[in-house]
Length: 189
Image 1 (cartoon, rainbow, N blue to C red):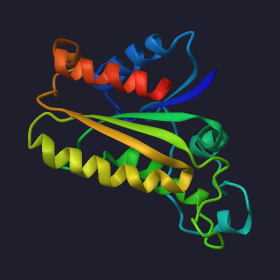
Image 2 (cartoon, rainbow, N blue to C red):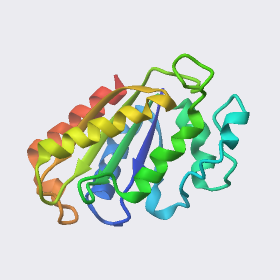
Image 3 (tube, rainbow, N blue to C red):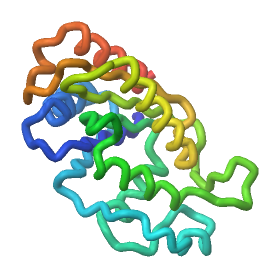
Image 4 (cartoon, helix red, strand yellow):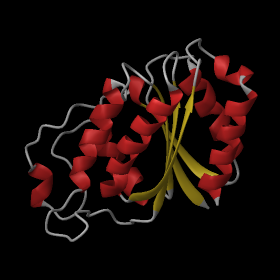
């Protein structure tokens, strides 16, 4: 059975990320082992850039927070799904901290710079934009998802649902829900 990590990177308790996170978890039920990580309820600190993780040859971090505890899950999963709003044309701050902390997977002595246990994992980024150019936001998401390759995520897909600022409004968007269903199939394949 596949292991899928769902990262809800929104602090809005009943927002679109939360709504779709529950929907994905239901779709994965019985088909995958699912771990849901709600960043808004967790302690994910900024990277200290101390290079303490470089003194080891397995992914680890000297900080003792919820991200450090999640490192084994990140390393052993088959796929990760990130759900998040677009904030000021970028990742929200808590997701940026999460991404920065994947520096703990980097090993400069290896040809691919990665000490991830597996380097064939899938990553799906599903984002919500209230306003603004969806094509520009999709490009931003794709660019940032590439950075997760250090943690072993080498195959990725991105989707940005536009005009999705109202909490729960994603459930009234058939085209965006169809994209979510495609993500579900792709992550399970």
